[in-house]
Amino acid sequence: MSIMEIFETMEYGPAPEASSLALAWMKEHQPFQLFINNQWVKPANETYFESRNPATGKALTQIAAADKADVDKAVAAARKAFTSWSKTPGHVRARYLYAIARHIQKHGRLLAVLEALDNGKTIRETRDIDIPLVARHFYYHAGWAQLMEAELPDYQPVGVVGQIIPWNFPLLMLGLEDRARPGHGQYRCPEACPLYLADRVEVCRDYAGSGPARRGCQHRYR
Image (cartoon, rainbow, N blue to C red; front, side):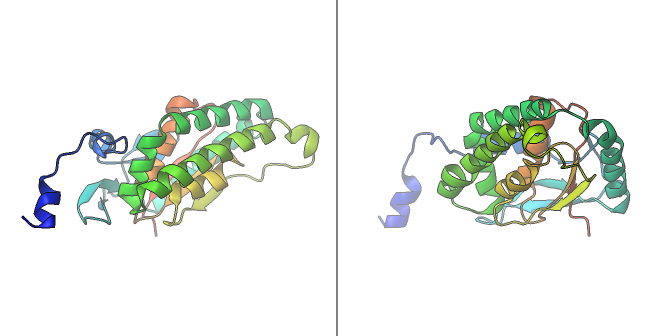
């Protein structure tokens, strides 16, 4: 018997980082829609594209492709919320950030596997580096949100922000940018690995509470 034959017939117990939970989550949510005005909506052009596992080439799920009409709608929703949300006290913003950080820690294994399947990174990197850092960034800036009035009294919110996320470490990149400006962001996911943001916006809506903020998630808009 060859080494490959032995490898293929070996039996293993369920690993803590098994992909079954992440795959079930994707199956439950597919096809992934656009997230506009705190709700999932179909794209105006009803166009979808495939997200594939770069390690195997197999399709993971279907993702909605946004067009100009979708982006305009998302920006308008964020701008409408800006008036009230920009006046939200720092301690209230901190409450949302702390809730997001706790959710990331609680579901760290799911997020790590999802990032590995979608991005192609090793589980060691997503589990031990990226996901813990994401939570730490949110905790850190939750603290700063409570100090804004005293430490940075002259700083004022500028308005709706659009962020283009690269594929390198998408969830961590979102954490690096988003934790400092919670509330009214619009995100353009990397086409190669868009799934991480679907979970992230669900966190904001379901676990942190939507509050007066309005977030948007756009895929593949060019």
